[in-house]
Image (cartoon, rainbow, N blue to C red; front, side, top):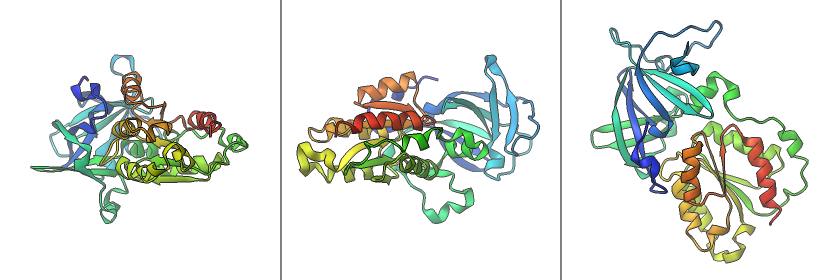
Length: 303
């Protein structure tokens, strides 16, 4: 699926695919979507979690089908088979069964806000943002959490982290800054860094707050890395996305010295080009936390 915005760099904009599950409107970043299709019968998998309808194989690719009606506890409308939104992220192919697909809307990340914490209990923290439109609101789902809740191995690959904690070159004063809007992944990244021996870590849930924090040390000039050693950023975030955050840092004569690692489920060949164009030093797909931390040690040796 080709959309023009995917070819732009650092604009802090995105395109959301609007869809309904029952009578509620949700959204998914179009960068995650490979295609859409009418619902077709799938092959059930014995012993699979309740939300997994089964598997099917269009064009020789085996795809797991997740029923969002069950995930969100929303009854399926009668006489409506629904649609499949086929996605690729975290190096996986997953299809989400929804009631209907309702078009694409282009908007700025600044128009997406974090949901109030008191409103999260209904959907168990599955909403990462609320997009405000003239004709209503779109709830942005945390698809990584949905998949990780079904299959824990789809989260982060933490193999070998205990070995990494034996490194002796992680004793530095500067902070590792994390920008990650998913509460689940934010905590997992924090825990992984602590396991690997990185103790000075601070996290934010969007790029704007991370940028505000980093800009607070611009008065240090060439010594800014004494306080901000490295930034690890997601790409999709309310208020300011990772590409725009990276561009703001790398376009600044002081902040440009801070290494920026993009760590996202969206990393693929096309996204690597976009990340490179805004100045990202390294880019990793989200399962690769062990590889990311190994690379962090290389950068820390220069402090």
